[in-house]
Length: 162
Image (cartoon, rainbow, N blue to C red; front, side):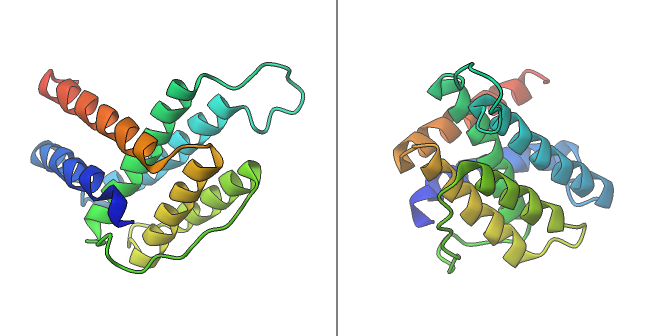
């Protein structure tokens, strides 16, 4: 996971900006952020259209899918930051090869989160998010670039008062 350290460090700066205005350690805020991650995963799945077997419409463009993926990735990093995960730690290796099954697994793992954030569950989420990126044919550089674009856009929005 060390390859994503630059994203993690930049996202920590964004988290600090939010921490100045919001109590991100409040139980209600944590619950909302868990729901937000679930919603972001659903938005990503919707853009991939991987589950829409009845439709002939193609998936969204790679850039749109990457933008939605970046939301999921940086939201997961937010949780990593909350429990002081180091990207040097050991992470499980996820070898799922089916995109739909990977989305289902992400929903299961994220749904295990509760207000008492479990570090191992958060690390498992990150491992599953990374594997999903591979299944969506994103390189590590694609992920870094997409997340950095999203983080910088969020910083600008924040500075303009969202």
